[in-house]
Amino acid sequence: MNKGIAITGMGIISSIGNTVEETYRSLILKKPGISRIKNIDTIHKDHIKVGEVKATNVELINILNLPETNNYSRTAMLSEIAAKQAVKNSGIKNINDYRTGFISATSVGGMDKTEKYNFTHFHKTDNRKYIESRTCADSTTKVANSLGITDFVTTISTACSSSANAIMLGARMIKSGKLDRVIVGGADCLSKFTINGFNSLMILSDTDCKPFDENRNGLNLGEAAAYLVLESDEIIKEENKKVIAYVSGYANANDAFHQTASSDNGEGATLAMKKALEVANLSADKIDYVNAHGTATANNDSSESMALQRIFGRSIPAMSSTKAYTGHTLAAAAAIESVFSVLALQYNKIFPNLNFKTPITGTNIVPTVEVLEKDLNHVLSNSFGFGGNCSTLIFSKS
Image 1 (cartoon, helix red, strand yellow):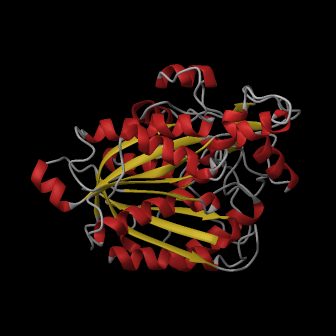
Image 2 (cartoon, helix red, strand yellow; image 1 turned 90 degrees about the horizontal axis):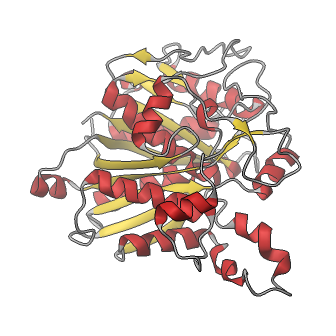
């Protein structure tokens, strides 16, 4: 087995908690964060269920103590809150003691401000400050500046696998000796644009989503941010730091099948899982738990089920999708589910696949539906994005 890259800190904010501790409590208590839309003025407010962070923009501004003149998008605020938690959790005193990078993922970026103010820029100047915050790179830059990171800063946007690829790139940067420490993860807020976009694809559920259920009828969108602190063996040794888990395997593949759909046989997902196992130097039977992508859409869940059977055969390990807790948080999904995966390893707990009743015809895979206590050593986490961008991460116990 490849021991991998050390994880020394985590931070998260989502619909089920504003900290790692709150998040774990919600997972154990089977307490989802799915509700009717409250913070967005949309015609879908009473019809679509989402996973909203339980804080308004004003409350987030106060948490970060931002000036009234700030041009932060909601994505940027969520990102900074989670990233600062991760740095604090890691016990970092001086961010520039070692070569440090910040790799952040997003797909929504500052879209919430663009859709609110874009049509007023011609005749009103008050909100033109948000023009600069619309890009995906803006939130990354703001958080990197706030943390004082200058050695390496970049943004990844590969749809719903974005933060998995951020984590993978960070691990590879350390493994290759280019950086000593990287804060990796991602953030996305809810916006009318994404709600309308997914609604036009007819894949949103008007009820609580049901991953891997025969009668699933679509996903719930969500918003969140999460980051992990990855550090080299040299830092761990020099500072005698506590390691909470390792990123032992990672891979990205593409089935080149369709702009938004996964291939029926799960080719991209299969390739990603296979390569991640090779990087970790693990056989499939060593995986103790799979945190599945599991969006609760007809296409994804069938495709991922096929891929799991291709990798594990008839011996699929305990598996579940946690998106019934948080909704699908797009570019942040892999990052928050990485935190879930590490929590699973830390506490030897498998988190349930909420709302499941009936197996999918043809695959008959039954996910874990209750909190399960089990000795865990390796957790595999899947994240698949539009355009066929499929990524798999493997986390191993320290």
